[in-house]
Amino acid sequence: MVAVTSQADQRLLERARRVLPGITQTYSKAPDQHVPGVYPAYLVRGDGCRVWDLEGHEYIDYPCALGPVVLGYRDPEVDLAVHAQVDRGPSFSLGTPLEVEVAELVVEMVPSAEMVRFVKTGSEATSAAVRLGRAFTGRDHVAMCGYHGWHEWCVGHTPRNAGVPEAVRALTHQWAYNDLDSLRGVLARYPEQVGVVIMEPVGVEEPQPGFLEGVRSLAHEAGALLIFDEVITGFRLARGGAQEHFGVSADLAAFGKAVANGYPLGLVAGRADVMELVTSATFVSGTFGGEAVSLAAARATLEKLRREPVCEHLWRQGAVLRDRFNQLAAAHEVPARMVGLAPRRVLEIAPHDGVDASALKGLIWQGCIDRGVLLGNANFVSYAHDDAAVAHTVEAFEYALAEAGAALRRNDVRETLRGLPPGEVSRRP
Image (cartoon, rainbow, N blue to C red; front, side, top):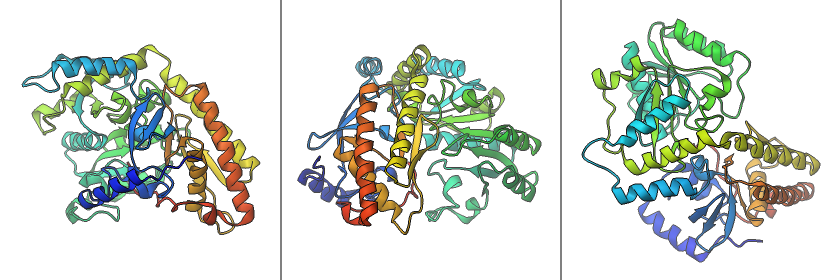
């Protein structure tokens, strides 16, 4: 059993509470989203598919920094490119050749990408895409499906919308995934007013046959642009993201996370006639959009993705983990399943005789952390997750699910959990 709650963690948490609202900069990394009292609060190092906490405990890591680490921590080629660029300098008074080189790689790899604009985060990328879509169509309303970041246009409908003007909230309208009628309803209620239809092409639920094509047709029939939020799917489902995997292209797409293997970079890519509005009609500009260290990391990452079977590896290893977890959960009569496409899976707990689902999830996580495996709400795989790491993880699943099954039979799930249940998954990365 790994003792992960340490005095060092507690001392640092006490300091953090005094100066950092929410403790971490990303809601999904906060201690209350895991198992407080069991999980480490801080990580200090990563290498390959493994990370280390303040006390030096080692874990096979599946959150992968919430998705950015697609090749593995300290990938040698990315490190070499980054170190070389650090020696040259991170930012300059004029543009750098890296901007051209990385944009050319994106255009080569991503269907529908004709031009590219760089930003620093996925939230910026989706917001820039929405602004471009509004500028192109001359319409203010947005039809939105899924999670797209923290900016005003996409959080107005949530309970955490303080500070978002009511006039802004009124311009964004939700519709449901795999439900074309719900999109039709939004477009009918706001005729000739919706300029943008934005969605994640896939999340946990897979698209039904014809669904993505149907969304594109409805958007175009209504005079709106279709934007795919590929912040998670980009460069992970396939080299060209979900557009390549599903064979459906959007007018614009937003990318982040995996594009630079953990370095801060996002981008918008799409039709040239829309992208050119950046210079002629609207404003998407930032000092660090062309920051060279992240661009060097992106060039090395994309070149490796283009050259090696990275995405194939993610599908293969992810499928083993998902399928073995589900087999073991069934064998131990634990109402838990890993769902979603193999490169990115989510743990779901089914209702079970009044059992606290959060406590049961926490107990499964606890068993895995005891065996040196770190799980989160969304679990990825990287190119560094080799067969040995996967085999070790399956052994951890066996231990954790056996413990959870025994606790269910004893009816003492909450008592077996050594810490607090993880918080509600209402706050996205």
